[in-house]
Length: 93
Image (tube, rainbow, N blue to C red; front, side, top):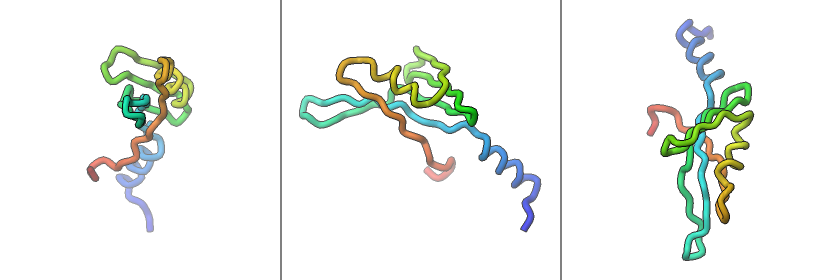
């Protein structure tokens, strides 16, 4: 089975597209349970270069890797940050 030109273009775009992720800040709630919120959105490019923008748009970062964003968003006392990769296929929500 051979791919059509259109299928080849779509495959190329999918192979080289940046990956979308959220930076989620987590902290302990008064009840003792953990709570969290999305602090920023990021794009990880195939070469590792990463662009991150805070949810409110006041902080924009250009980093060497997505993992470095967790340091920037976990600098407050009792706050940790982690990445959650967006893996849904567009149109399947």
